[in-house]
Amino acid sequence: MANNTNNTNNTSSVSVPEAREALNQFKYEVANEIGVPLKQGYNGDLTSAQNGYVGGYMVKKMIEAQEKQMAGKTGASK
Image (cartoon, rainbow, N blue to C red):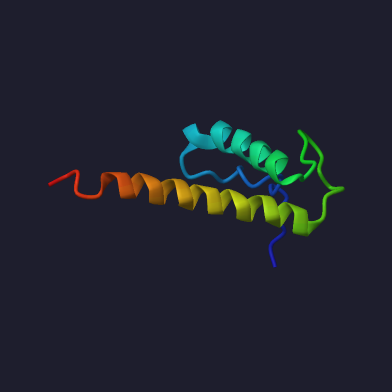
């Protein structure tokens, strides 16, 4: 099994590099919103559950935002 030593945060493999900083900021906003003490730098003191909750909540909020955007565009292209 390969050892991935470049796995320092969840924004390191962003598909759109221009979005990296926005996603990083979003991560900290979500962590603050849900009460996870995420900070710049080392976060090895957080549990995997806490980290997973931040990532899961980020996905939930992004899906909600996309659904709202799609709902607003429904029928607009006719």
